[in-house]
Amino acid sequence: MAGTVLGLGAGVFILALLWVLLLLLCVLFSRASGVARFSVIFVFLGALIITSILLLFPRATEAPAPEVEMKIVDTFYIGRYVLLAFLTAVFLGSLFLVLTHHILEPIYAKPLRSY
View 1 (spheres, rainbow, N blue to C red):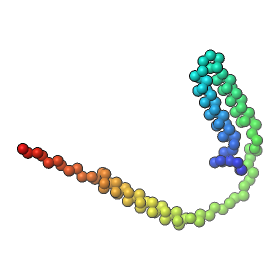
View 2: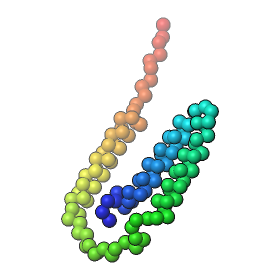
View 3: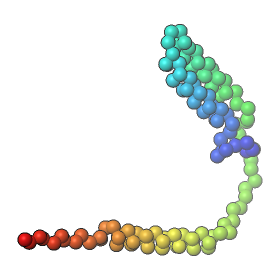
View 4: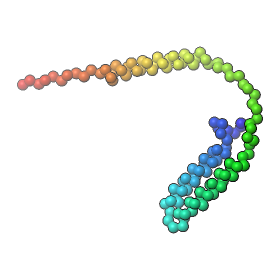
C-alpha cells in the first residue's frame, strides 16, 4: 500500500481538495452580481461530474494483494509501564497540590473595627 496516508489513497485527498475548492468558489460567486452569480451551478455540476468519474473508474483493484503476516514484538514493554507509573505518581502529586493550594485555601476573617 505504497503512497497512502493513514490507509487512504491519493484519490480521497483529491476529492477532499476538489470539494473544498468548490465550497470556496461557491462563497466567492455568491458575493458576485449578475450572471456570475449563477455560475455556481456550473461549478457544482463540474465538481459532481469529476467526483463521479473518480468514483466510478478506480485505478487499483478492489481486493488488495495478500500481505505476509508479521509478528509484532513489544520490546519497550517494561519501560512503558515504568513511564506510566511515573506519570501516574506525578499526576496524583499534582492533584494533591492543587487540592491543598486552591481548594483548601483558608479564608481569614477580617478584624472588626471598634472605635
